[in-house]
Image (cartoon, rainbow, N blue to C red):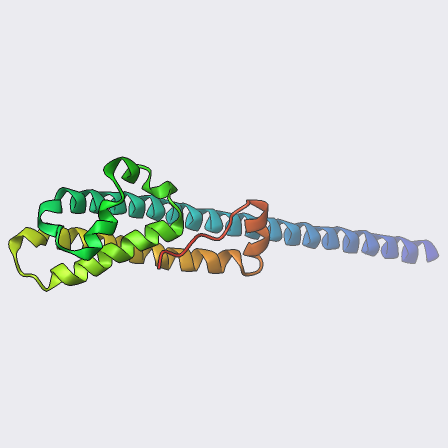
Length: 173
Protein backbone atom coordinates (compact mmCIF):
# COMPACT_ATOMS: atom_id res chain seq x y z
CA UNK A 1 0.00 0.00 0.00
CA UNK A 2 2.79 2.43 0.88
CA UNK A 3 4.44 1.43 -2.35
CA UNK A 4 1.28 2.25 -4.32
CA UNK A 5 0.94 5.67 -2.68
CA UNK A 6 4.61 6.40 -3.26
CA UNK A 7 4.43 5.33 -6.93
CA UNK A 8 1.33 7.50 -7.51
CA UNK A 9 3.11 10.42 -5.83
CA UNK A 10 6.23 9.95 -8.00
CA UNK A 11 4.08 9.56 -11.09
CA UNK A 12 2.21 12.78 -10.23
CA UNK A 13 5.52 14.61 -9.68
CA UNK A 14 6.77 13.31 -13.01
CA UNK A 15 3.68 14.60 -14.84
CA UNK A 16 3.83 17.94 -13.05
CA UNK A 17 7.50 18.20 -14.06
CA UNK A 18 6.65 17.39 -17.71
CA UNK A 19 3.72 19.84 -17.83
CA UNK A 20 5.79 22.61 -16.22
CA UNK A 21 8.57 22.04 -18.76
CA UNK A 22 6.11 22.09 -21.65
CA UNK A 23 4.63 25.35 -20.37
CA UNK A 24 8.13 26.79 -19.98
CA UNK A 25 9.11 25.73 -23.52
CA UNK A 26 5.93 27.23 -24.98
CA UNK A 27 6.51 30.47 -23.03
CA UNK A 28 10.13 30.72 -24.24
CA UNK A 29 9.04 29.96 -27.83
CA UNK A 30 6.43 32.74 -27.64
CA UNK A 31 8.99 35.22 -26.33
CA UNK A 32 11.46 34.30 -29.09
CA UNK A 33 8.71 34.51 -31.71
CA UNK A 34 7.67 37.92 -30.44
CA UNK A 35 11.31 39.02 -30.56
CA UNK A 36 11.55 38.02 -34.22
CA UNK A 37 8.27 39.82 -34.90
CA UNK A 38 9.55 43.04 -33.31
CA UNK A 39 12.89 42.73 -35.11
CA UNK A 40 11.17 42.31 -38.49
CA UNK A 41 8.82 45.25 -37.86
CA UNK A 42 11.76 47.44 -36.85
CA UNK A 43 13.78 46.37 -39.88
CA UNK A 44 10.82 47.05 -42.18
CA UNK A 45 10.29 50.58 -40.90
CA UNK A 46 14.04 51.25 -41.12
CA UNK A 47 13.98 50.13 -44.77
CA UNK A 48 11.02 52.39 -45.49
CA UNK A 49 12.75 55.39 -43.91
CA UNK A 50 15.97 54.67 -45.78
CA UNK A 51 14.13 54.30 -49.08
CA UNK A 52 12.20 57.52 -48.53
CA UNK A 53 15.41 59.32 -47.56
CA UNK A 54 17.06 58.27 -50.82
CA UNK A 55 13.96 59.25 -52.79
CA UNK A 56 13.78 62.62 -51.06
CA UNK A 57 17.43 63.42 -51.71
CA UNK A 58 17.11 62.36 -55.35
CA UNK A 59 14.08 64.62 -55.69
CA UNK A 60 15.99 67.44 -53.95
CA UNK A 61 18.82 66.99 -56.45
CA UNK A 62 16.35 67.04 -59.37
CA UNK A 63 14.73 70.20 -58.03
CA UNK A 64 18.05 72.01 -57.55
CA UNK A 65 19.09 70.96 -61.05
CA UNK A 66 15.80 72.19 -62.55
CA UNK A 67 16.04 75.49 -60.71
CA UNK A 68 19.61 75.91 -61.97
CA UNK A 69 18.55 75.07 -65.53
CA UNK A 70 15.86 77.74 -65.30
CA UNK A 71 18.35 80.35 -64.09
CA UNK A 72 17.43 82.73 -66.92
CA UNK A 73 13.95 83.30 -65.44
CA UNK A 74 15.01 83.18 -61.78
CA UNK A 75 18.03 85.50 -61.72
CA UNK A 76 16.18 88.44 -60.19
CA UNK A 77 15.07 86.47 -57.11
CA UNK A 78 17.30 86.88 -54.06
CA UNK A 79 16.76 83.26 -52.96
CA UNK A 80 18.13 82.02 -56.28
CA UNK A 81 21.62 83.27 -55.47
CA UNK A 82 21.78 80.79 -52.56
CA UNK A 83 20.50 77.95 -54.75
CA UNK A 84 23.02 78.88 -57.44
CA UNK A 85 25.82 78.52 -54.88
CA UNK A 86 25.17 74.76 -54.96
CA UNK A 87 26.78 74.07 -58.31
CA UNK A 88 25.63 71.04 -60.30
CA UNK A 89 28.86 69.18 -59.51
CA UNK A 90 28.23 69.68 -55.80
CA UNK A 91 24.60 68.71 -56.17
CA UNK A 92 25.54 65.17 -57.13
CA UNK A 93 26.85 64.82 -53.59
CA UNK A 94 24.04 66.85 -52.09
CA UNK A 95 23.23 64.08 -49.64
CA UNK A 96 26.72 64.39 -48.14
CA UNK A 97 26.29 68.05 -47.28
CA UNK A 98 25.45 68.83 -43.70
CA UNK A 99 21.83 68.67 -42.69
CA UNK A 100 21.78 72.40 -41.97
CA UNK A 101 23.11 73.18 -45.49
CA UNK A 102 20.46 70.96 -47.08
CA UNK A 103 17.77 72.57 -44.92
CA UNK A 104 18.97 76.07 -45.88
CA UNK A 105 18.82 75.03 -49.52
CA UNK A 106 15.31 73.69 -49.07
CA UNK A 107 14.20 76.85 -47.26
CA UNK A 108 15.64 78.98 -50.08
CA UNK A 109 13.67 76.94 -52.62
CA UNK A 110 10.59 77.16 -50.41
CA UNK A 111 10.92 80.93 -50.25
CA UNK A 112 11.39 81.11 -54.01
CA UNK A 113 8.38 78.83 -54.52
CA UNK A 114 6.33 81.26 -52.44
CA UNK A 115 7.43 84.08 -54.70
CA UNK A 116 6.87 82.28 -58.01
CA UNK A 117 3.61 80.67 -56.85
CA UNK A 118 1.91 84.03 -57.17
CA UNK A 119 3.31 84.48 -60.69
CA UNK A 120 0.93 82.95 -63.22
CA UNK A 121 3.34 82.75 -66.17
CA UNK A 122 3.58 79.34 -67.80
CA UNK A 123 7.39 79.39 -67.53
CA UNK A 124 7.09 78.76 -63.79
CA UNK A 125 4.74 75.76 -63.97
CA UNK A 126 7.48 73.06 -64.16
CA UNK A 127 9.22 74.67 -61.17
CA UNK A 128 5.99 74.77 -59.18
CA UNK A 129 5.17 71.11 -59.95
CA UNK A 130 8.70 69.99 -59.14
CA UNK A 131 8.71 71.78 -55.80
CA UNK A 132 5.27 70.43 -54.90
CA UNK A 133 6.54 66.92 -55.68
CA UNK A 134 9.58 67.58 -53.50
CA UNK A 135 7.31 68.80 -50.72
CA UNK A 136 5.25 65.59 -50.89
CA UNK A 137 8.43 63.49 -50.65
CA UNK A 138 9.58 65.54 -47.67
CA UNK A 139 6.27 65.10 -45.86
CA UNK A 140 6.28 61.32 -46.42
CA UNK A 141 9.88 61.10 -45.24
CA UNK A 142 9.23 63.19 -42.12
CA UNK A 143 6.15 61.20 -41.13
CA UNK A 144 8.08 57.91 -41.39
CA UNK A 145 11.04 59.40 -39.50
CA UNK A 146 8.75 60.43 -36.64
CA UNK A 147 7.29 56.93 -36.49
CA UNK A 148 10.75 55.30 -36.73
CA UNK A 149 12.24 57.50 -34.01
CA UNK A 150 9.30 56.76 -31.72
CA UNK A 151 9.68 53.02 -32.34
CA UNK A 152 13.39 52.92 -31.53
CA UNK A 153 12.86 54.86 -28.29
CA UNK A 154 10.06 52.72 -26.84
CA UNK A 155 10.33 49.46 -24.96
CA UNK A 156 10.82 46.64 -26.09
CA UNK A 157 11.91 47.79 -29.57
CA UNK A 158 14.57 49.98 -27.97
CA UNK A 159 16.48 46.84 -26.98
CA UNK A 160 16.42 45.50 -30.53
CA UNK A 161 17.26 48.89 -32.05
CA UNK A 162 20.39 49.14 -29.88
CA UNK A 163 21.47 45.61 -30.79
CA UNK A 164 20.87 46.31 -34.48
CA UNK A 165 22.65 49.68 -34.13
CA UNK A 166 19.72 51.67 -35.48
CA UNK A 167 20.27 55.34 -34.73
CA UNK A 168 17.64 58.08 -34.80
CA UNK A 169 17.16 59.67 -38.21
CA UNK A 170 17.19 63.41 -38.81
CA UNK A 171 13.86 65.09 -39.34
CA UNK A 172 13.97 67.32 -42.42
CA UNK A 173 11.93 70.26 -41.18
